Amino acid sequence: MDQDTSGDARFDADDEDAQGWQLQANCLGVDPDLFFPERGASTKEAKAVCRGCVVREDCLEYALANGEKFGIWGGLSERERRKIRRQRALARAAAASQSATG
Ligand code: SF4
Image (cartoon, rainbow, N blue to C red; front, top):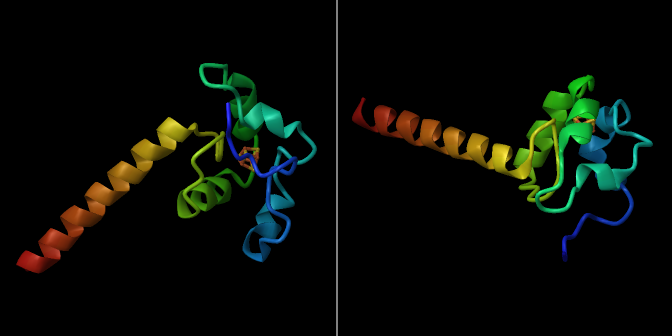
């Protein structure tokens, strides 16, 4: 499968915004492949690492903001993140139509 998992690093070391929380990540030093399982492979192990992570929220928001399409971020799979994006888009649309109608 041809996925861009950004080389060996879980995070991009050049991204200054993300540095603070990334240094507290539970997955630092964990094999990054664990977080990019092949299609259909188990995500259980990765999610178990995320479960005890103190920067889980930051990680999830980072992934959502950067449109990360692959892998486990903030304890959520690509499909689970898509669902959140959809829910937020719907909420934004509802808020916009409410403010438009007064
Ligand atoms: S939530 Fe998971 S992927 Fe994100 S920093 Fe924590 S351990 Fe790593």
